[in-house]
Image 1 (spheres, rainbow, N blue to C red):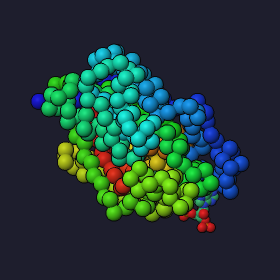
Image 2 (image 1 turned 120 degrees about the horizontal axis):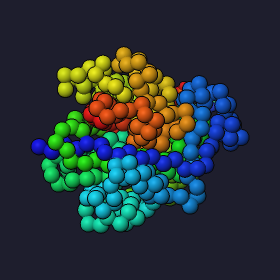
Image 3 (image 1 turned 135 degrees about the vertical axis):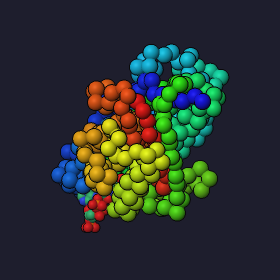
Image 4 (image 1 turned 90 degrees about the vertical axis):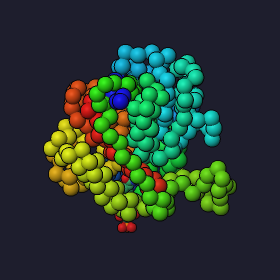
Length: 322
Ligand code: COA
């Protein structure tokens, strides 16, 4: 049986930085309030002419470079996003075109902030069943395009970015396991009311933007991130003591801290990019992974636990031998 191994990571954040001091000029808030409640100090914002595919391409090229591979080596592209350039075609097909590696399957996955973990699970299954040899798995979002800049409960949290990994078939794991889940009953705690089929021309202008019941999302996120970590670890007779690095969805500093505490995992073993990235939706997990690989914290042979949580709700965990 084949396994899938991560052989390269890449990340990209747009140039423009929006600080909490900038937000003080836009909404009724203070930099101190934002830091205390969210841990976010700044976030990156895509330029007006910069799209999700632009961010994805930059992260993907860096992941390929880190893997020592050429685009032509890739035979599968799966991309998690909620903010595609167009209704169709998918960002993945346009990324394939930019890279010039034609013919293999390429498709987007919509699981909001869990998009990357969903994409990783699917790519892992392609490789394990010999349907692909080398996959590019991307999480990319220009989430600030669907943010209502008058809503102080949401605009403080989110930023734009992209992260990518290259997976390659190998004799040993690699990806040990991925476990996904969803519960559609939570739709209205975190959603964008407008849409293709339900109509963009809603009575309220704000319907085209993210609406969130923050404190309720917070509670479900913390409980879920703890539960899915314990479930995937126990399925492999492991405990948090076996995990070198926890890489959770970078939703909010307080969610990360509460998750680590409930799991009994020292915060020093958790990758936390919330301060400078904010919540970049599907990009958050691969971006954090890439940061910790490049700064030397994550070493070959270590055990990683990746966790996603997002609108839907959706969630997922991936247990990885790096
Ligand atoms: N600046 C100042 N005050 C603000 C504010 C801001 N940016 N945003 C909200 N407030 C106010 C509220 O209006 C409220 O005032 P009130 O008591 O007078 O009504 C007060 O702060 C408390 O609001 P609440 O929503 O209970 O705050 P909170 O401690 O839950 O923090 C979030 C708000 C959004 C930071 C927090 O709920 C959160 O991060 N939730 C999770 C969101 C998330 O991660 N979503 C993505 C998941 S993928």
